[in-house]
Image 1 (cartoon, rainbow, N blue to C red):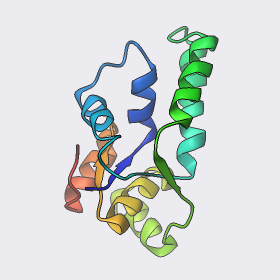
Image 2: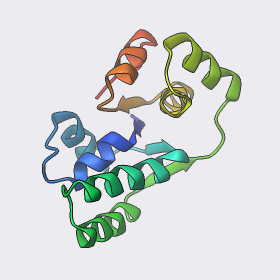
Image 3: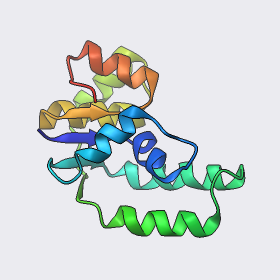
Amino acid sequence: MPLVIDASVAAAWGLADEDHPTASRAEERLLRDVIFAPSLWWFEVRNTLIVAERRGRIAQTDVGRFLTALARLPVEIDREPVEPDLLRLARHYRLTVYDAAYLELALRKGADLATLDRELISAGAAERVDLV
């Protein structure tokens, strides 16, 4: 089954103090499922890590090592959202466009969704997307 991962899940893999069952279950699926993320994922993961670095949650060298490891993962970056669907989801569920991009991608690919974001979990459930 394909899987869409958001930045919160990916960042949890790199942060020692972020042990979350959803992130662990998503990580287990990396080698057996097709994994998707929207193009903004690249930026969101790095932003989360740099904020964590500023707060002393992760060392600069560990950020570099994690990003090197992350780049080796079989994550397919999607660059073509269906804009009307994305905007409908953002409006209907009062999501950021960024979060709606993950949901739109999961719906379009018929994929499960792995996220730690409460609003996105709620919207995904309402759209009958299987959540990790």
